Image (cartoon, rainbow, N blue to C red; front, side, top):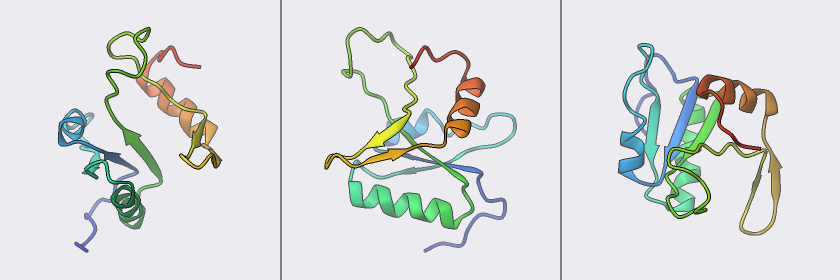
Length: 112
């Protein structure tokens, strides 16, 4: 594994595709987020998430573009979940304070 960055990220982001990562890599407010690409491989996604935590990330975001998710959603709609449900049905609550802070930073997301 490579050495952690000198200034560890507060938030780490994992995407499935390079094109998705490219949407996020532009510095904002002088900070470029740490974005890693898993190739859509679940085991690799877990490895990358763990490496981001080891680098100092205190929050993790899974980012993806889901154009065919729901035809009723408009372009650019942001979805912020209240829980994570695995393919096996296990449910994991997310940190609601962190979610709300992210929602506030993004503006009105129009999500439930």
